[in-house]
Image (cartoon, rainbow, N blue to C red; front, side, top):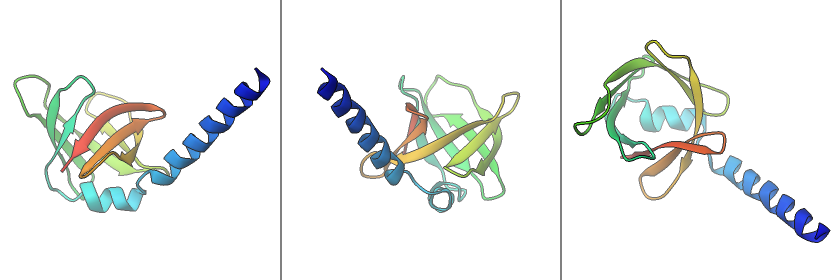
Length: 118
């Protein structure tokens, strides 16, 4: 029993270290996404948006379908990733992790908040 517990703790630690190594750096996020070019974001529930992050720190989202709300806000890079502040909301910070060819997962701690694709 004790060996199983130690094994699972070590496995979780190694998985966490692997996750940290795979996340995009703030500079890579800026050059890949925050260049004024439109890309697609999808929520875990399937809502899709067209996103544009401009180099001057502004962000917009437009629903790609008939559901979802338009939004405007600001962005900035952080030590580990990036943060957004949508109008009338507080700031939230995220990391970005590769999730396949031209796909990335937007993570807040261990939770995936969206997937981005180009």
